[in-house]
Image (cartoon, rainbow, N blue to C red; front, top):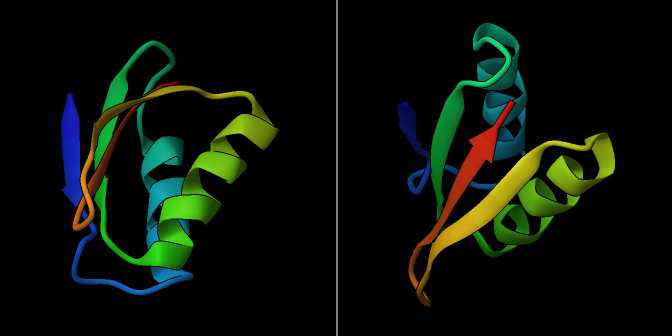
Length: 71
């Protein structure tokens, strides 16, 4: 599993980095993403749902949202 900490970045950069990371992993692999920006916390799950990637929320705190994405 690859873990990407994007808590230091603001929208739209986390979404761009998630898209790039998903292109680099193989089908069936997992990617864990940490987000803190309010816009990214909404945009990234919305994008994943739109394109059909299975994802689940691992942690949802006020400061950090952790998603696990399966390609």
